[in-house]
Length: 147
Image (cartoon, rainbow, N blue to C red; front, side, top):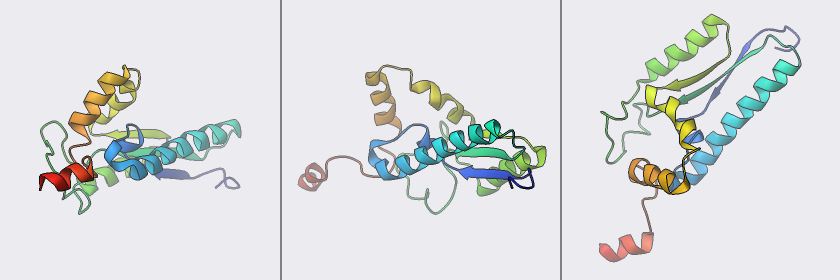
């Protein structure tokens, strides 16, 4: 791509690469690394004055087998995306020949601003939105004692 000075690199991340969930530390860390990789690569290509474009895709919940097991999921607040919707956004970015940050649906665009809130507010947001939905949901010893 660099030799041709053309192309488009797509980095598939997640909304959980923008805002972590304590119940999915490994997943969030890997997606966060993908977001930072994309950001660094984008700026490196810019310094090289390259015409290679980059786009990062940070979708919310996609209606796949992976998200089928979500518990307590509000489709009103967090609408599920179809794989076709995500693919269409990627194809659109490539067709436009422009680098893009693809955050979808609408609420994912608000996640970076949560980082400026006080820690106690972020804790409430995460506890009520992410931690109870999937992944590890608390202390396994306490859960075993309650069963």
